[in-house]
Amino acid sequence: MQPDNNAVIYYNGHFLEYQDVHLNPLDRGFVFGDGIYEVIRVYAGIPFKLESHLNRLDHSLSTIRLDPPPATDWQKIIFELLHRNSLTETGAVVYIQVTRGSAPRTHAFPPMAKPTVLAMVVPTESPRADQESGIMVMTHPDERWERCDIKSTNLLPNILAYQKAREYGASEALLHRGVTITEASHTTVFCVRDGHLLTHPLTTRILPGITREVIFHICAELNIEIVQEPATMSDLAYLDEMFICGTTTEIIPVTHYDQQPVGTGKPGPVTRIIQKKFIETTTAAPPPFTELCKSDNPIT
Image 1 (cartoon, rainbow, N blue to C red):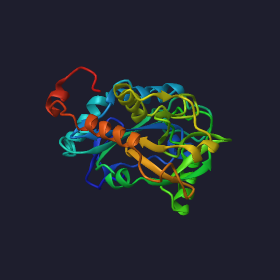
Image 2 (image 1 turned 90 degrees about the vertical axis):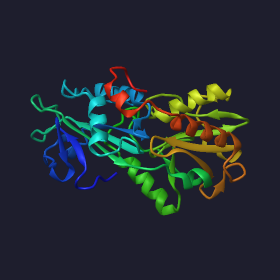
Image 3 (image 1 turned 180 degrees about the vertical axis):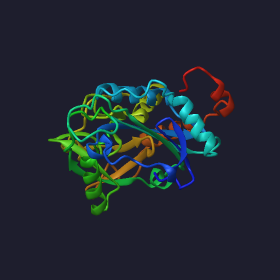
Image 4 (image 1 turned 180 degrees about the horizontal axis):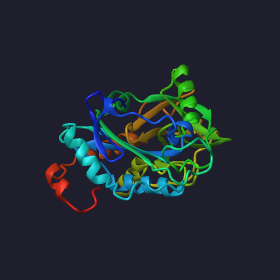
C-alpha cells in the first residue's frame, strides 16, 4: 500500500502528511524487524470486524512484550484518518505498525526507548477478477519461524515464497511443513472435500485470520461443517475445491496447484456460496459514519 505524498497519516501521536514523516535509522523495526502490524479492511467507510482486529493487535503486542503509548486510542485514530483522507464513504485499507522504538543497536530490549506508532489508510477496491476466475498456487516449504500467530513485521520467508510463486506463474505460495499444509504466504487456506471444509487448527503455526473467523460464522449459518484438521500434500489430488482468504484478498477460489487442477479446475459450488454470503456480510447497510464516531461501544 502506498499513500500519496499529501495523504494524512498518524505517526507518534501526530497527524502529518506522508511526505513529512521521517524514520529514525536506528528504529528497531528497521534494524531488527522488532515490531508488529495489523491490516483492517474498510467497507463504505466502516472498518470491518474492527474489534477482532484490535484484539489480534493486542495479542501480537503482548506476546512480544511491547506496550504502545498509554494514550493510543486505535478506534479514534482510525476514524480520524478516514475523515482526514476523505474515505468515510468508500473502500479502504488501514495499516497499523508498532515497533519497540529507536535506540542504540543492541539485541536486548532498550529500557528507555519509546514505541514507534504508525497508522495510515489508502483507498482500495475488491479484487473481483481473481474472485471470479480463481487462481493457481505453487506449493512451497513453510520456512517461517514457529510463532506465526504473531503478526510480526518479520516477513522475509513469506516474501521469498511469494516471489518464487510469482516467478513460477502462480498467484500465491501454498506452504507446507513436511506433508502438512499450514497456510499460504499471506492468506488462510480452506480445502473442500465431500461437502465439508478442512483447515489448519489455530496453533502457533498459523495466523488467526479475521476472515477465517468470519468464514466459521458463515459456515455455521449455512450448516457447512468445518473440520479443523490440515490437509496434506497427498490430499491435494483428491480435493473437490480449495480457496484462500484474507483481509485484502477476501475469498479467492484456487483452481490449480503446481499446474494440476483442483477438482474440476474451476471454482466450485461450496466456495461460491461462501463467497456470496461473505459479500452480503461486508455490504450490509452499516450505521452512518458519524454515528459510529460518536459511539463509545466497540465496533465490529
